[in-house]
Image (cartoon, rainbow, N blue to C red):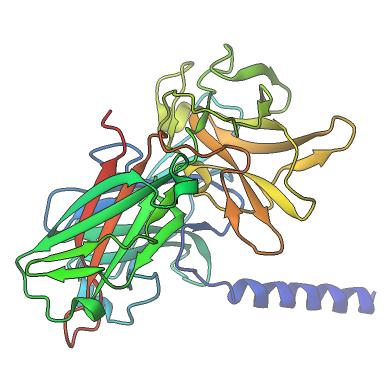
Length: 421
């Protein structure tokens, strides 16, 4: 009995130490498996990238679900970050007006759903916390006012538009990639004083808001009076990839797009039609939302509190390029992260790959990504193919650190599409 009691005490002690040592990372991350459906976007357009303009009336809308239900004591704060997502190291008094942390008080309990949950929402800036500098920020949510109890973290951007960004999208300069890749040439024009653009200015490009696609430009190719030109032949070359796959699970009674079967046991279950390798010789056009997802339901009224959760079964019928790698299903719904939760498992009997994810009712874009274990590189063209004609959104961020300054300002942001919808 004594030995059992000692072992139990040691186990609890070790668990407490592990929990106490948990820290925030400077990325979009969920630290508790019961936290689902994290969303953050400019309130003017649902599922837009979380970018707002400094000093404007724009707000970010941030939300998540807690599957444990009830009401929890959730707090939040924001931290200013460098262009490459590290702590700026400056005092909160330098970049915040009001208080440095506050409690999330806006929540709603689920209604008419099998899965009970509590939906939490937050708008930024607000009367309590208002960032006063441009740049990259990390929103931190934690429990009981203790930052050693992280719940989730979310990147967002505040832009002070002091420059203009022009983007030209062309086929790749590499002859072998002209039918698969999209090359971006960028010109930044400005009237402010920039003394040393080779050292003080950084530009980051993203494809469809996916952080895994980020390309950093540390130096312009050419500097002209009032303009910086980024058109190096070998840089800013993106694989066009393919249009995102899509499924519609808005109803638990009627089958939506790409849904093969729906059934209910202890939870709602959605079986999708099997997916095939889309690495075809020719491009096929169809509409997608460039990786976004939209929480919706056709059975009740309120999307946030009345949309139920479903166990969604993905099936991929395709060969892999090697045995030394893994397949993941990704999209904005999981921030394109490659984790055990969204990794596909191979069934040797059916000779297919499967993944089962617990997702809220809605319309989802998704893709399959291959990660090679040797190189660690992720490739979304292995099963999707890559075409120059693919419609993609590109985001450009221009950062400037003034001489003698201790932080990076976000002085320019631009969104451009390969095809105007």
